[in-house]
Image (cartoon, rainbow, N blue to C red; front, side, top):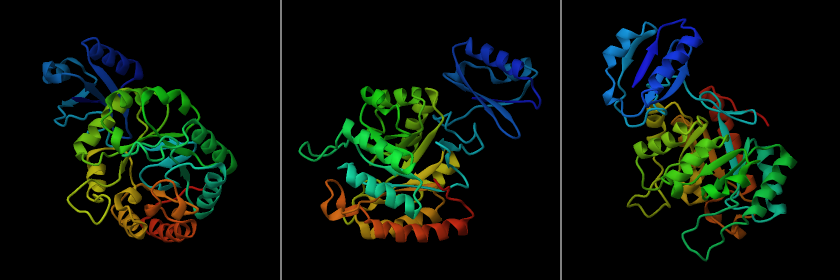
Length: 340
């Protein structure tokens, strides 16, 4: 449920209105836009008499029930696009960012070489897995704390903000210096983890699960926002279908649909969607055309010897070529890539 307030209401009266609502057991969110100020109620709003609240509170213009189960991420409640700030880098409408780096951090030489190269090519953030969820218990699962240390060293060398995946909420103390916490596809519905990263003051990159609907993705984002963290980036990374020619099937329709339903920025990971490096560039171009706010691309200095997902990783030259193409397309779309 939302209440749209009349123009020019003093902040003190808004706070009193929120306190009155919260005293009845609800949680409220305040959205101050360029045209309207909106108070959103979270909870069992069926017990609220909408007309009574409007009639008895002269600061309220009108009220409306939100029928979708997700409230805080809903564009109805928050019409303006959320802009996520990562150390001065903006992800959101009009700004296009590319996150690049290896699937896994393997060594100091590897991660620093990749970081320097992708930055020179135009990437604005560095990705790299320190903790890796793997289907097989015998596969390489990352360098763990050493991997985080090497990512931070690469950040110091290049200035690129770091994006890396968390496996569970007990690891949060290790992520104090990490710029963006990634919640991976396998953890998309780990609700305890979502709540804890919502309480953590860091931007969160939330990947869609490989067999989850868009509503389920938005409900997972709702957990993070309802815990107090509005700095969330949604990531479409392909879903599992009956097709076996690719690792997953990239759902391009998810990009405009998510942007219609939610105010959160949407990026695309074509590497995991394809599973084949020959498809990464075409899918990246398609994501730009569909309106994505950014890309997340796996890049390695020696993909043939990568310890994880080498088949879908671009080498440094291929990534540079793709970035030249992307920059032209982004300029055509009227968006910008910030320089780190």
